Image (tube, rainbow, N blue to C red; front, side, top):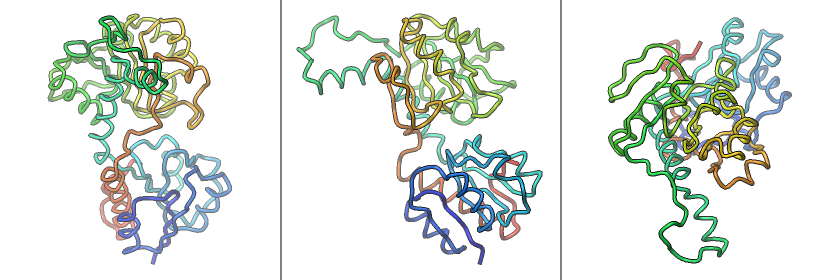
Amino acid sequence: MKRIFITRPLPAPVIAEAEKHFRVEVREKTTPLTRTERRAAMALYDGIVPTLGDNFNEQVLQGGPHRCKILANFGVGYNHIDADFAAENGICVTNTPGALTDATADIALMLMLMTCRRAAEGERMVRSGQWEGWHPTQMLGLHLSGKRLGIVGMGRIGQAIAKRAHFGFGMEVAYFNRSPKKVDVPATQLKSLKTLAANVDVLVISVPGGTNTKHLIDADILAVMKSHAHLVNIARGDVVDENALITALQTGQIGGAGLDVYENEPDVPAALLKLNNVTLLPHLGTAALEVRTAMGMLAVENLRAFFEGEGLPNPVN
């Protein structure tokens, strides 16, 4: 029976399903694997279920042959894995798309509402005892209904966000995508990211992480946004230049931001923590039991199919 290493605790049904097919070892820590742990895992196990923060880069994967022949990533984003180098060395990489689409889109809408309507700021006011009662000009925010939404990256999640925003809030949707993309929701594709950023009230980031998208949202993009516009990032933290964003928020260059991800998680800059015009969540995108269970089941199915010589449900290399 193949030996499988799961790098973080997963929901009980996932572990039970994995144990039907494999000898399973679950690491009880919730922190990313150390470099020593990663290299040891490649030598000791036939398959590994890594997740965000478990950096299987060239330095870890070189020096084979390794016993491990598949990295069944728990999550859709796999920028922490050098998938090309893995493929060159006979290591398969899979991920878990689909299962997390709706949950992540929901978080995007929640952040849009929270930042535009100043919900987190208001909640802090109530908890601190500083609320002195309702009055007509208190905490006026941005009304979402009928506004223009810009989506950067029109994959599964981007389209799910577009549907919620258009049909739920009557928002006009525009988007930027690296290649032409037809979608089944009323939306306009723009050829330039800068043009998109300059012409929307809310800009939502929904692109994969990796070298191609690092600091895609930089000072130049933030500079063309409207002064009342809000930025929402539910993708990967390093897609946004965090220092440039802090400056834009501090100076009032943009109206606000809603973040579920950060450039150097779990470290959040002190400057961000001090700002009232930013909503900060602890990477909650898929944090629902049924969603995390479904993701885990997909990872197990990728492993089962690989070792039984079947077509892989979700290969990325």
